Image 1: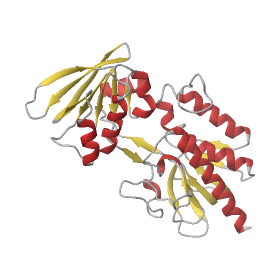
Image 2 (image 1 turned 90 degrees about the vertical axis):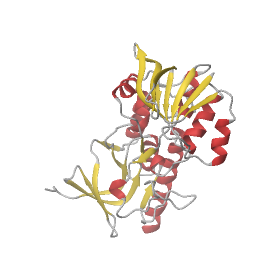
Image 3 (image 1 turned 180 degrees about the vertical axis):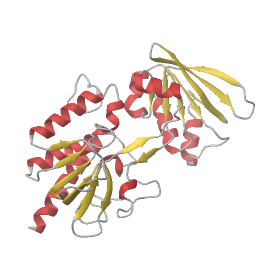
Image 4 (image 1 turned 45 degrees about the horizontal axis):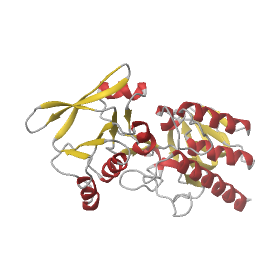
Length: 315
């Protein structure tokens, strides 16, 4: 079962912009951070072809390239970056116990949770094909809407974030078609009214996606079906956006860490502190509002500084 227990001053769980920023700050503060990269090394940005809204990249940068640079920067300050993911924790005592890959046991003075969130997809083969090809499927209108300037797009979703993203796209795209699976929105009335009153947004209720269409790795349209009449039709578009929610990757912490009903970790406002002393959170594991690389990086900095102050208060 377990080999020798390893003692760690600062454990960072997750390797997106939040985790790497926390690592850079923690390493520079002589906290000897150890990072486990998790199931998706590099986080959600590794599925993003072009990042054009992160300061300091005047010509933009690909998501995977940016994450490699962040890793190199963290390792330059001697962050110990490792493969593996956390399968169990025990935060009931003074020592924070963490198990990696169900076998390796770590005893940590501080833990920074940077496990992020995963966008929900329809998981139909054609959607996944174009998502992997980077040619027209996205779960972030704010990140990728710019690439569809003056083009026609389709967005799936019925809640506040779907309405917000559809409205955002309407300022960039020539036309936005919203696909709502039921006969009404789940959004607040003010958000529903906003999309209904936007001239270039068309709303199709009782409509679900059958297939994402395309050629040469680029999306050209979406085949949809009316669930009441079973009639199918094709909507031409170059961008297909999902706004059906995110799932925070926080299940492993739930016995000890307070989360909201969706699973986002609750932090003490204005800090990265959780309800467990010495355990901190940053990035999309606790942020359901902004979900941007730059805000994740900012909270990663906060988590490292909070962890450093916590360690200083103990010694």
